[in-house]
Amino acid sequence: MKEIQIHIKTKIAYETGEVEEWRHDYKGMLYLKNDQNLYLKYEDDQEQLGKTNTILKWKWNESPAKLTLLRQGETKANQFFQEGKPHQSFYQTPYGAFEMLVYPFKVKIQSQSYEHGEIELEYDLFIGKQKVGRYQLIVHYHP
Image (cartoon, rainbow, N blue to C red; front, side, top):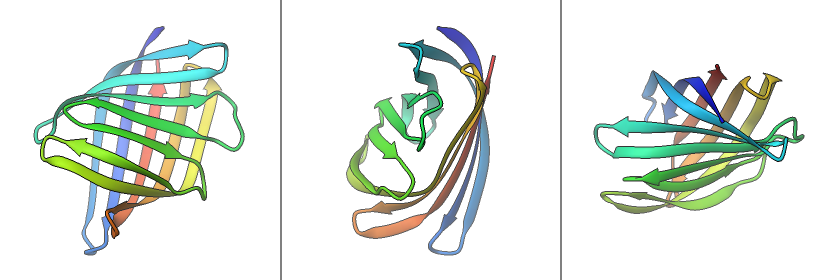
């Protein structure tokens, strides 16, 4: 277990044509299990959605890259990302549960070492049957 700095850049191109971008910095923890399974954990405190523990899980140097995103707390979700593989799940918020589908176009994980790297995700997000938009996330982590 190692304390880690996490920098997340998010860009969303909504179907309405609006584009939203933001950056967040977190302190988190990085776990390496069985010399291959990495877990990056941090607490997200969003004004509208409350406190949520977020865990990103992947196998170090696995090809093709696969990533699981778990959210636990006021908001709950379990998303799986692998290029070209749609994943359906539910997004539970204080306002109710929503059926969610992600269609990943890019899942890239680069690591100089297990404790320093970058994750890039690009995917379309659907809530119910309606496309919300194209999401791009870049997660950079380091000691």
